[in-house]
Structure formats: structure tokens, C-alpha cells
Length: 462
Ligand SMILES: Cc1ncc(COP(=O)(O)O)c(C=O)c1O
Image (tube, rainbow, N blue to C red; front, side, top):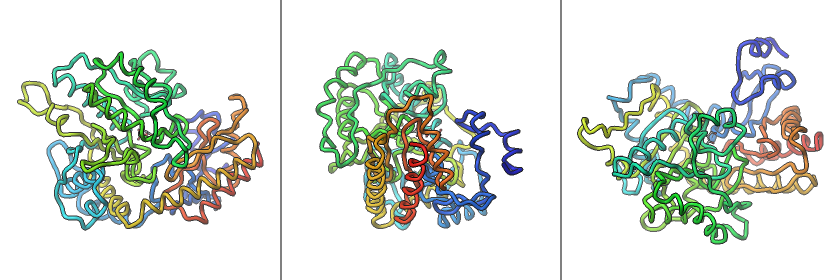
């Protein structure tokens, strides 16, 4: 253990960790990071196989993103967002809306003409982290329903296995007991939908067909139809709940049901968006028609890939009727009075604009889909080599499998984590779910290296 690590263990309380574990698996002492690689003080180079909590979509130290950050810092670094605006902010909102409404990349690329394009989502609210974005969306849905004259619509529905953040509100609409259990007494009740159409990915013969599961889901929703303010979900990819893939057809059906019953849809695209699922937004995988994406939500939450993991920012995109629900004379008390100090941080806005420049590059999404298939093929091969690995699945640039037949006490996932690190890859299995979620820019050769590390780790511990 080097001096920095020893000193760190005296003062730093790591997020999402049992600190006692840090003594047999000490934190890495990082001195540099470039592309998919982390460099440690002792000279080790480690592949960041989980894109640093799923946010480093363009890897570490991307020159285009850093140049945007530096340029903005030279102009001004932060101003209060309540009473100011600036050109970069306006441009980002226009581009995000165009992207989310399904316009082709050429219309929100760096050199696309300025202006607001048509589409269901029409406004952008900015915040500074994912949990807060979901909180904002929940609060907006609740307040809008009430201001439309439906104060009885005060419940939320959410999905089995869902995850939306760490605040009390987001834990209340999540379904990861490990994170929420200690706070159960303070969480509000919500309706959890079970029996979701889980799939292995696009190659699944039932892909884009949730007809078998839908009637039972609809039956769960029916008794709550008049009391729901909104349904919140991670479109297609449920991350923290175990890297589960939910059929995109479910989103189309949910859209139809919500429209018929006056319920709002909140899509949490924080992990699934910005190319991760092989589309700019995972909701787009449900298809589109002349009016835009078929599963366009009423509120769409973005973060993580929004700034390529360079700097914190989050966004909530909303439809015009929701915006109008807050428009009135000040004394009516209808304003949306939510604020965070770092909301709409200009440095983050500059980086987000630069991220969109990169996402708009030709064939960017095709590249992710192709590399993602390669990532999954390697995991499939690995699962075939080890009888205790199974349920290989994935979408876009994500591949996951289960370590089967082990008790929770064995902590096999943790053992694999430790072994993979010894072989040069930073992976953080979710319990006994092992997954690869690298930067979207990873090369074929680096994917091979990632597979090799995981294979060697499996050999050590399985
Ligand atoms: C789907 C989803 N929603 C919300 C969050 C919370 O975001 P943050 O960690 O920025 O609060 C996460 C984080 O992993 C996430 O995966």
C-alpha cells in the first residue's frame, strides 16, 4: 500500500463501499488517465471496463472535450442560472431537443443551423447530477398534475429492478433493496410493475414484441389509473438493478396506456442514453414515425454521457403542456421553484456541446453497434467456457452475464472484481452479475484485452 492510499484510508469515505473491504482491496492510486486506460502511481495500466460508473463515453482526456472546457474557462466559469443565459446554453438546449426528438444528426451537429426544431419535447431544465434530474422530473410531474386540476394524481409507478438514484425520492421509485433498505421507513410508497418483458438483446426472437407480457402489466396498472401522476422507468437498459434488457415494445405500449389514462411518462436515460444502447436515446429503439419517436416520454432525464463524464451536468427535457402548467401570474403559486447552485454550469454546458459534436459524427452509432456485438460475442465465448456463467445479454456497448450457483456469502462477484483488477481491468460486478460497459470509443484490440482480463479472472475464481 503506497503512502497516498494509506493516507486516503485515514480520511476518505468511499462512495458505495464497505470501507472494511478497502483493506484487502485498496483503492487505486491514479496519476493519469487516457482513453480507456487508467495509470496508477506504481506504473500499472488498468482498463476502465465500466467507463467510470458508466459516464466516460469518450474515454478519459478526450482532446475535443477538454479544449471546450478550457475555452469556456477562459471566458467565464460559472454564473447563477436563475437570471442569466448565454449562447452556449441556448445552443445546447436546441441541440438536445433536436436529438431527443429524433432529428437526424446533421440537424444538431456542430455546424447545423441554430434554431428550435419541431418535436414533442420542447423545453430543457438543467441540473447537476442524475439523481437530481429524476427528482426534478418527479416534482414537475406531481406539480403539473396538481395544477391541471388533478391533485389526486399523487402516486408514481416504477419498474421491478429499477434504479434512479440515491436521494429519498429516487430511492422511493427504485427497486434495489441493497441501497434503499436502511431508509425504508422514510421512503414513500410507489407501484412496482412486475413481470417485465426481459430479453437477451436484439438477437432475441421476441425482440420488439412484448405482447405476451403486456396484459399482466396492464392489469397491474389498471387499479391505479386515476391516482398515478407518472410512470418512471429506465428505457431498455436497467443498469444498477442487474444490467437487464427490457423489450423496447414495452415502451410503445406504456406510451399508449399513459396517453389513454392521463398519466405522464418519465424516461430515465441517465445510463442508457447518449449512444450506450446503440441509439442516441434508448427510447429511440422503440422506433419512430413521421411525428418522431413512438416512445417519446413526457419528461426525459439525461446525465452521465451528456458530458462524456468530464464534468457534472444533468438535464430534464419536457413537453410543452408540462411547461405551460407552470405558466401563470406569480401570485397563483404555480412556478417551479426548484434550484441547485450548480444548475447549468457553463463549463459543463461547453463540454456537453462538444459531446454532441462527437456524437453527430458520421457512422458513430453504427460503430458502437458493431463493437458492441464484438464485446458480447467475447462474453458469450467466455460463458461457454465456464459452466457457472450464463444468461449472456446486452445491448449497444454493454455485455453482461450471471455467475450462477454461488451463495451470496461467497461474494463471487467481488472475488472476480479482485482477480480482474490483478489482471489489469477495473470491473465492478453488481453482486454476481458481471458486465462490461467500457467507453464507447474502445478499440477492437482493447476489447480483446478486456476479454482476456475477464477470462483470466474467471479462471482464477470460478
Ligand atoms: C438510470 C440511472 N438513474 C439515475 C442515476 C443517478 O445518477 P447520479 O449518480 O448522477 O446521481 C444513475 C446512476 O448510476 C442511473 O444509472
